[in-house]
Length: 294
Image (cartoon, rainbow, N blue to C red; front, side):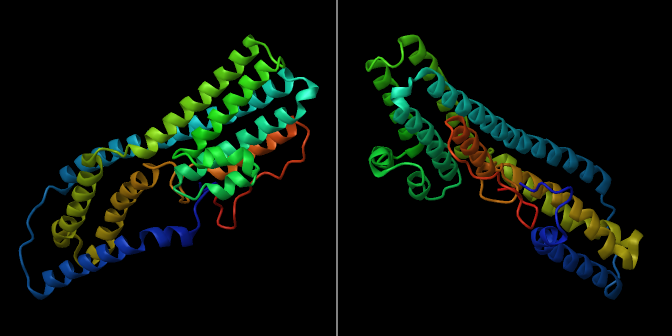
């Protein structure tokens, strides 16, 4: 996620130079053709077309942003639930179960990092093994959904604590309720990741925007003359930028500069949970040189 007040000029150019160049070349072709082979440009209702397209793109961008914000909200719930689980393990379990306290905390840190990698379609094994030993991680790593396997293992260890007499059934129920919240948040994230916008929301705005950019210099050349490439390109860029915004936000868990900063939030969970059991914690994530928080 870009956290600076404005994205860098290099980032903007990297994202828009291809469509901007193609649009400018087409505007130049239309303008040169108009003066070399004089023709009567048709009177196109560009204002009507542009208004309808703006409404369409605005509705699509709002839908894409709603997905992005829901993804951020779900990760906020994950942070809160992780803290609650660590607090319950610290307060409920007796001092003689110190190893189990530490195990539950480390498993939760491994879980959120595994979930981050799954959502970003990245390898999971290395991140899990950073926090868990082979014996702790092997059962989860054999499952298709590694993150869910880690949560299941945590639930079994909570049940073990109840059978050992370290916690009672009420405390077990409270900790299980936190695991349910964690699973519900994961399910919401997987729904966002695996369910794209309907095809009409993706195909039609792209088609209509490109059609509008093709028609725009034809309708403007008589009034703008030699300034058509400049005016048409700037106007077209506005519509192409709104189209790109929707594409950037529609997947909040893509490994791009526009996604929800999953790595930073996993680090926040790691810091809070390690400090909850008195362990040394790493520093918080900071934006890179481009102003991006990953």
